[in-house]
Length: 371
Image (tube, rainbow, N blue to C red; front, side, top):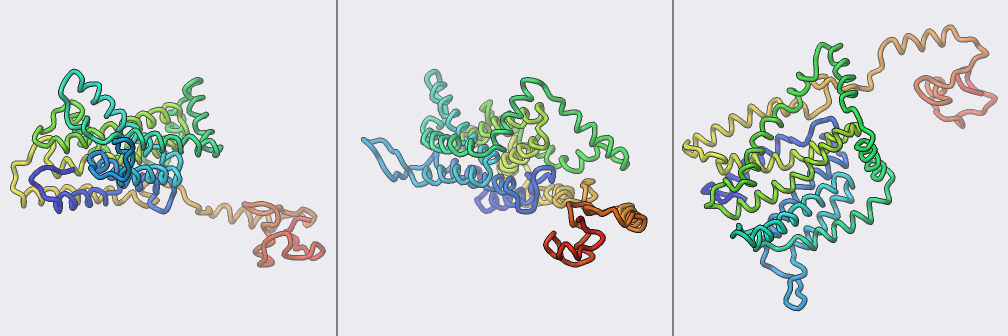
């Protein structure tokens, strides 16, 4: 995507370092460990890469009456969109939105081109086939899952009957106050780096939409418009899920949005957007390295669940042990326990070493087992 005098090696290095910030990980609904949502989110850059390469592709696999109906990258982009939906339907649908937004941008460019000469968008390959095929697969695949349709119903009900997203925030805020912290401190810990880089990405998107980017690089500018338009529907869904207060779903979309932020900030640093740096190459590289280290330290601290984020754990308090001990010591011999912190027969495990109702004959049941 870089058209400036900085070479591909420098561009790849900058992109790699920004990727290593793991901006999509917030440990609220996107995690560092293997997780379908996270897998779908990190699959998205591959689909975005295919889209940006496809629109400028010149090779053809098949033609019908002189019209190109299939290209190598076009087939790969279609398969990538379907694969993203298979990985995680909800997060994969964002790839469909990305492709559909690109097609919408092409339509807008053609309409706008009737009145004014526009950039190279009108010369790009159409995204209509990919939008139709991936959209058809999505429409056939999603209704099979109750969770997917239930999420849609929850959003619609929230819009129709109202919801108060502040209730959960208030509850969390009260808990944090008890621990001596607060929402503001937690936001700084988790989202400060993302917020700073989102501001940079926002500037790039604003310049791309308003046509204020350097006209010497039309190819780069066109591709940045695809990224910008792909960001819009995801941002709209983030807003819908937030106002309808559908549990932690908005943070999935927030994680997905960070993919765009990562790409745009890497381009901004590489190409010097909005202002080309007056520093020498060595000084510029040193400045970028220092900035990345400063950003990396606070970002790395949130990658794992820890007391730094006040995450809950499976720790069993001492009072639980004391309560069980007292109950067992003082119990009536004729009263049998169903099991501590679990279902029936739970107390037979520590006494017999064999869980389950069939571990011992009924007539030999231990006093802690249910008859």
